Length: 329
Ligand code: HEM
Image (tube, rainbow, N blue to C red):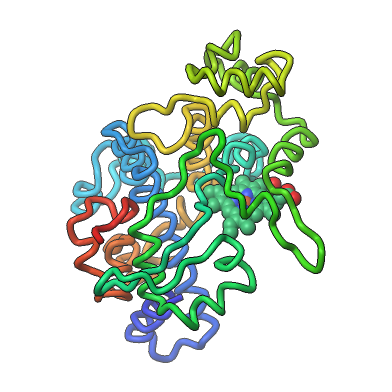
């Protein structure tokens, strides 16, 4: 929201006579493209923290020639290999754009959420409040902000680590999520139920269809003997293991925040949500974004957004290579 307003202020300089609706929509377009860029070249490489991950995601956006070439000379031809997807021709790859069922299934990453949240002041690191999940979601949010300033909420979350996407790490708060009155939802069960009722293949079948190796036993799925026993107590054979459960058993590739199975789907969707959208392809140009808006997308990053809106937190992320990594306390 703060970034949106900053973009509006910038556009107003070049277009003083523009009406509010035009300014709103143009700023929204610019902000959406900046978010897509941040997601591609900052967020995803943080989750796939390896030279290959960084190379692949920067290649998605700027191509093999890279950011400096793109900034200096623009695109070289229309292909996405050399100059990246933004600005290349739109392609729906035979089907209209949609988030695929497979993507939804592998993105059930609720275990990233912790059970406890400690809120600390960014100046002295002293704890102001400590809350469980329920107190920081839904109706609890407004209450929280009456006690903890926005900068300190951001500082506290940015200096914390997310939960591992592994077995036995589901947030308790989501296993009994309060909806209203005496209605509670067990999101852990629902995650499994939804994949089953939607016909998403089980773990082994899912990987087989992707041409990936398939474990023949619980022992091949996980080297953890406790987990092998847990799985055997629930499933008759490894073929029955649900997709989400199987992914939570996997040993992750070095630097990866999620499984190789999830990665295969994720990387397709990451490219496609750019390639299928005209505003990231044929209409990613100054004539559509305005010259100032187009430059805004090129010149900014999440780091720049944070520097602009929470400059007092700068010492905490100044030395962090990627601002999605936990900040200095
Ligand atoms: C405040 C935190 C969160 C809450 C309260 C929450 C709650 C829920 C609920 C109630 C559902 C729907 C269950 C149903 O099908 O009936 C759901 C679905 C889902 N959640 Fe979360 N979630 C949270 C955070 C996250 C995070 C951090 C991720 C991923 C990084 C995530 C990914 C998903 C996905 C992919 C679905 C399935 C969506 C679909 O079926 O189309 N959620 N979540």
